[in-house]
Image (cartoon, rainbow, N blue to C red; front, top):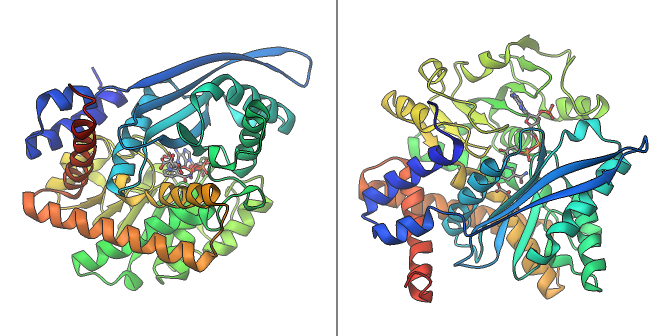
Length: 416
Ligand SMILES: NC(=O)C1=CN([C@@H]2O[C@H](COP(=O)(O)OP(=O)(O)OC[C@H]3O[C@@H](n4cnc5c(N)ncnc54)[C@H](OP(=O)(O)O)[C@@H]3O)[C@@H](O)[C@H]2O)C=CC1
Ligand SMILES: O=C(O)CCC(=O)C(=O)O
């Protein structure tokens, strides 16, 4: 039987725990989510019907600080998916040495079927239902798949009405006008680009001569492509979203494609300046760098043998299954894991939270420079652990992160 997402995540954790010789009692505790809330809530639809939706918020571990992680709206959201995403956030926050634990939330809904009014009512009711578990010192949500700054603004207002004052530190990724940070919107993609460049340097490759394919053209995929093209002069040869996949061996002008998408209901379908290809073909193109930036399980044991990219930088969370990981490593592919590659988003979320708590705001250069410095430092630390244990980047990143959380658990005396 196929392994569940949580079991797949545990496989990676257990491998790192074995290599680093982690105390099995601490491991047993860290494997489990600390707290999860499930809410069922009604929403008035435009046609007068009332629909009941299911939502989740999981705080996997808060030993190092308040839970941190996005909220996703998607028809496939499940309790298990949210718990797995929260588990990954614990390691991502620890890896970047942020004073946060791991959290994640989700609502099982297809937001493309909702009007703006329905989306607002759903967002407000969901956030009210979880409000007692949330707060700047407890748990700080942010955007994820199909949520954005507007949704964060509704969350902020709902929570502020609940506590009786404007509380900007309760969510990050909100509009700049409401205490959001400049540079948060692009942050995950910028982090992916910085890490891709560090990985190229590590491998002795020139990123300005690299060809890149990007799966997913939402927040993470589009900013990764744009920044790799603009700042690093890499050639973006293929891009996909749910509606279509395109290839142009001479390079795709990413800003032109973003402008096309924004005029075309958010979809790239019909883009005239590249040739349409099948979705699965994009992952198997002969490119230097592949950036899966859509959803989990994009690369599995079925398509891993056909992957031709030499470097995979995980923009999405969990895009490569452990079975695929083994196949790719054996083929000599370098994989930079999600908890390092896409940590730029939560890092600038941390900057946003700090700015909100201090009521003192930074400029874009400051945010970008601090982000770049922290991402490069994290890459260097992971590379060092990789050499020390003679292992791969994913195992090294987990060793570093698990060690930090385990130390917090022991020092606080959480595990008696
Ligand atoms: N936003 C953030 O700051 C962070 C996000 N992440 C992770 O990155 C990933 C993407 O998130 P984000 O960019 O925010 O989400 P978005 O909703 O902004 O974008 C997701 C993109 O993936 C596309 N997509 C979905 N399924 C497929 C598919 N099968 N093939 C090709 N494209 C597909 C979507 O297409 P369409 O729009 O047409 O449906 C959309 O372009 C997720 O794994 C998320 O957890 C990680 C760190 C931070
Ligand atoms: O910005 C944040 O707080 C969370 C980002 C997130 O959900 C992720 O990194 O997967």
